[in-house]
Figure: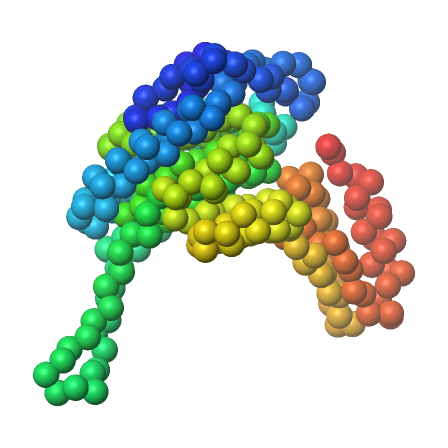
Length: 312
């Protein structure tokens, strides 16, 4: 399944330097889906140089042209909704209907950012000197390292990539080893929509090794990560050495609060949807329930009754 992919560098697929691979497992059957390419340090260096060159092209591309390309990506994602959804079902075990919903949401993110591209406004600032005018102009920060988890591979890759592209930045995306094919398929869509070679790159393989090498590079100017708090702390420490910009979306403890005046039937449905969505692998999945004492027994009993009816 992964033979047509590899490492996506300079606008084309290629095997890793030593042609090494790793197994990708179907979680529903525990069968091997295929063998995905495993990047070497040489491949990471190639991707860094590719993104550095791509940045020079993309940051000079007019915002309205960038917007056109981003909108085209959104349209192509909708055309290939079934293909992308099937990848997620195979790699994550996500029900097909949920996969289609994720693709639809991801396409909307690209469309949103296509419009925001046109609205990167500057600012005129009043000066205390009579003959001086000051203004603020926003420039692309540079090459972005986008570290993507496995639970929502398409929507989280789309959020990071589309935002960077809208701002005029180039990207090196690292999908999780559990879901490489989902994001690899997205790379083809991005390429077919007209993103120039080198602007978006993909590295597949050992997460820690790839991330460490990317963060240690002077070429990387911004890091975007969605993942655990533990990994977020490690990356923040590495980034601090170089004062790199970091955006982190880490695991939370989202409390679920049940007040005295609620409709228990309705609120238990909401609680189950929040807690068990994507088999509970959601960063906003509630870990704590605060229930008014007058509603505690009624809530708990109905919650258990409905949970027993869930089909995994």
